[in-house]
Amino acid sequence: MFWGYDHFPQNAKYYKYKNFDLLGMTGKFHISWGEFGGFKNPDALRYECSVMNALGAKCSIGDQLHPTGIMDEETYRIIGAAYQEVEKREELCLKAKSVSDIAVVSPSALLKDNRKEDAEYGASIMLLETQRQFDIVDEDADFSQYKMLILPDEAPVNDALSSKINKFLENGGKLIFSGESGLTEGQSGFNFKTDIKYVSAPVWDLDYSVVKEALAKSMVKTPFLNYKAGYMAEAGKNCEILAETLPPYFKRTYKHFCSHMNTPYDYKAKRSPAVIRNGNIIYIAHKIFSMYKDKGMKLHRDLVNNCINLLMPEKIVTTSLPSCGRVFLTTRSGADKELLLHLLYVTPVKHGGTEVIEDIIKVHNVEVSVKAEFKAKSVVHALSGKEIPFKQDGATVSFTVPELEMYDIIKIS
Image 1 (tube, helix red, strand yellow):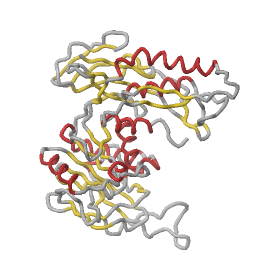
Image 2 (cartoon, rainbow, N blue to C red; image 1 turned 90 degrees about the vertical axis):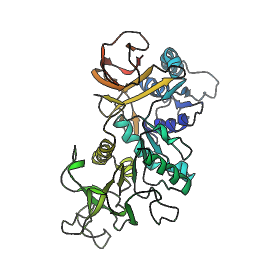
Image 3 (cartoon, rainbow, N blue to C red; image 1 turned 45 degrees about the vertical axis):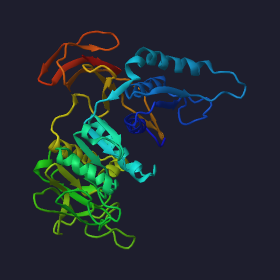
Image 4 (cartoon, helix red, strand yellow; image 1 turned 90 degrees about the horizontal axis):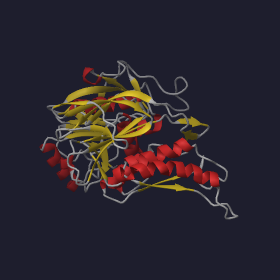
C-alpha cells in the first residue's frame, strides 16, 4: 500500500506538537478498506496499536459489516486481542508528551499543501531509523525548546520565520537545511543570517557527492549517486566545505546516453559544494530527504546522520536496536521526575505489493542510555513493575533491557 508503517508517526508527531486529541486509525483488512474476507495478521494489529499508544494516540480499528448485518466473530477476536494490550497501558500513554530535541519544520504546513509531504516524510523516516527524538512543527512553534531545526528540501522562509530562526541561532541553536529550503519567496537567496550563498537551481538532472573526512563515518570514499541534482551554492567566509558535487559527463536523453540507468561522473569537471558548514549551520545542496523517501539509499541517511552528529554529538536516547527499532521518549503531565521510554521492534516486509508484519523476533540485551534532568531512583518495566539495574553518570542513565518482544515501556523515575 501507499502509506506504510512510518506514515502514522510522521503525522502523529505533528498533531501531538499541536496538542490535538489524537486518534490513530487502522483497519483489520489485509490490503485495503472494504476487503471482505481479508484479514491483517493479528501481530500487525498489535504493533499498530502499540505505535499509536507510544505516540500518545487513542486507537481505532476499522471493519466493514457484511450486508447481512452479522458481525464476524473472528474479526472481533483479533481486534479484541490487540485492545486487551491497549487497555493495560493506555493510562501510561494517553496524556504523554514527547521529549524531543529536534524540530522538523514541515514544508507542507508552510506551503499549506499536503502534497508537499515527501521531504518531511523522508526526514521522519531517517530520524525514526536513527532513533532521534523529534517533533514535526510549523512556523508557530516555540523553537527555544529544541536544540536543532531541520528545514527539509522545500521549506520556504518568509520574514517572520526568518526572524525566529535568527533568534534561535543567536541563542546557540543548530540548523540543517537542504535543497531549496531557506529561500525567500522569490528564491533570491537564503532568508536568514548565514555566510552560505545561494547561486541557482540545479544545473544537471543528477549528480554525485564525495564526502570529506568530517562526514566519512559509515560512508564510501568514492562518489555516490544523487538521484536529483543539487542546488548551486557558495561557501563564504567562515564556512567549511564538508562534501563536494561531481557532475555527470552530460544530461541523459534518448539521443545521448551511457549504460542502462545514469550517466557516470566526470572526474575532471569542476566541483561544487554538496555540504557546507557555517558554524552551527549545515546546508545540504540536494533534496536529500525526498530522495531518501523515494529511493531509500542508506548513504543519504548516513550523510544526514553525520551532519547531525557534527552539530549535536549527544543524543537524548541511545540504544543498541538496529534501524527497524522505534524509540520514543515521553513524559506525563505533572510527572516532572519521570520519563517513559517506549521501545518497539518489528521487521515489516513486503509480500506482493503489501507491507506486512508476520515474525515477531525477540531482541535480547538491549543497551540503553537516556538523558535525564533529575537523579533517578529506579528504572522499571512500567507494566510489571519489575526492576532493571541501572547506573547514572551525570545526566546519563544507562541500563540493559534483558528482552524486548515487540513493545515495552520502561519507566525512569
